[in-house]
Amino acid sequence: MPEKLAPPNPPLSDGIIALRAFRADDAPAVSAACQDPEIQRWIPMIPVPYTEADARRFILMTLQAWHDGTSYEFAIVDAATDRFVGSIGLHLGPNPRLHAVGYLVAPEARRRGVASRALRLVTRWGFEHVDIERLALWTLPGNVASQAVAENAGFRFEGLARNWTSDRDDRPTDAVMFAMTPDDLADLVALEAGAGAQTAAAGAVAAGAGAAEAPLPPTPPMAAVPRELRVPGTRAAPFVQVAAIADLTPGSMRRVTLAGLDLLVAWTPDGIVVTDDRCPHMAAPLSIGDLDGCVVACPLHEGRFDLVTGETVQMPTTGGLDADGNYHSPWSPSGAELKPEPPTRKIEARRLTRVSRLRYYPARFREGYLEAQLPILPE
Ligand code: FES
Image 1: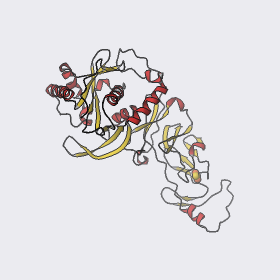
Image 2: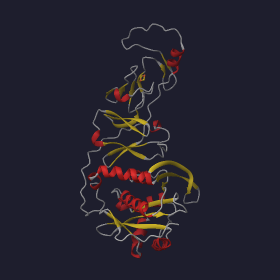
Image 3: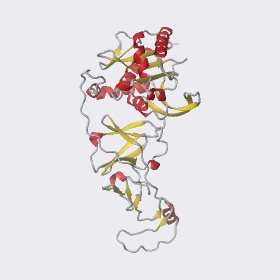
Image 4: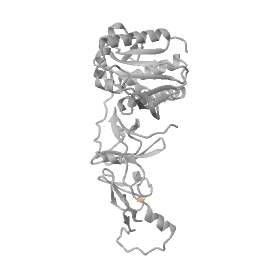
């Protein structure tokens, strides 16, 4: 067990929030926050109903854990007013590879970056003072807000841990696993040092705190693509930043390569789509084709595809099978009759090549960025 630590004095703070040990008079605010259905939904170990006596017990437990050196739980408070806005804890395991971090934010303080700020402060403090080889962070699969916090704070998505935890009825349930290692933190610190002032300008958390916030560019519309054409494996995947909104322009297409995936980000008249930058015929990069309304023309074989419906508008000149398995003969764009070719393996391969429907990565906008759910595998 690592050496016992005392709550930092002065409290950890980035000027917007502060992290301090809990006090008995936090109980009403803790109890009020834990009435929130979202907290109850995503943190199954929280008692329901949650009373002020539960909050007092929780606070006593956190103080005892500080004393024992088994867990370091902080109240997240507004740095200006000391108002309780959430809770974050570094929970120590039996060895340096089994420590974990968890957090919650009161409903009225959400969407202001509170959890990301608290997580940054705690991870840096933890790695500095505790022997940590791996710091785990897990969420329930549907808790995309919490997954975004993990990603924002530099935790890496690792995958779905099956039957990792229990639901409220004590049934085994899956968890989405993230982790940070000392190397990850070193990378992050180097990256942030390069970003400089940009980090300091990130949004204010509390009304009246007075922190400057850079104006965000207007958010483009998101195209309503068919849900059944979602890329497999994205349902529980974390959201990952794909592009700054400021870098996107209406009517444009661009390739973004992330974790070995070549993505096509297109801004069609119906809105933004994120799909693979691979023609559904023979994988040519669609990003260097022509976009006409919602239809992209592939730079090879004249295939044309609707980026919003996922359907083939024009089969390639080579012919082949459509998405439903129907055969289409080769054709010539000029209308000239094609000379019959002698049957070869190449002709047979073309005949059997299926032109599938496009597939989409679920996407959203957050704090000036386009984010998409990517089924990233651990490196
Ligand atoms: S590769 Fe795009 S139509 Fe053939």
